[in-house]
Image (cartoon, rainbow, N blue to C red; front, side, top):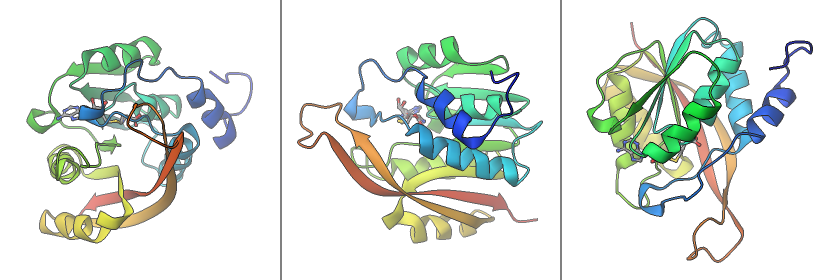
Length: 203
Ligand code: SAH
């Protein structure tokens, strides 16, 4: 993409906004795609910090792949996409640039490694503490982690990082739009405070 034109954060956001998302979002798996503007903002920060170009990535709970696809667009060497949901994973595979590998399985049992993890995991509203379990798992996968969480849980997750030998270096806050995909949602767009956290392994 954007071969002729220079890639900017705005162009990345437009590109990501055109990606397909879940056809049938399953609320039991807390399936919500990351908003394309928010994804582009975080990816652009990661690029600026030197965490993307030439790096191998894992997108844990990748869904339809917006985060991992963004890393590949920005010059990551490779990205492993991991999700339980085979249908979502197939959509990710269909629209991924070259460099993607696709693993249909449970993140909590995943055993691969990479330079960086990027993830927007379930926030734990359905399955308690699944967000913290994903974060703990990510510490066994990579030395650098980008992970989205509810802002209310940040201090707890910072401590979890410390206990596992990781320091939280950055926090970017967003009003996260969760579009109405479920019948039980009353408002069309409901917003929650979400933070993307960057963790780095202590030397
Ligand atoms: N990261 C994507 C999707 C977020 S929704 C995006 O940013 O758009 C959370 C995703 O985690 C869903 O696709 C869901 O299927 C997946 N998921 C939930 N629990 C999982 C588990 N234990 N193992 C693997 N994937 C899981």
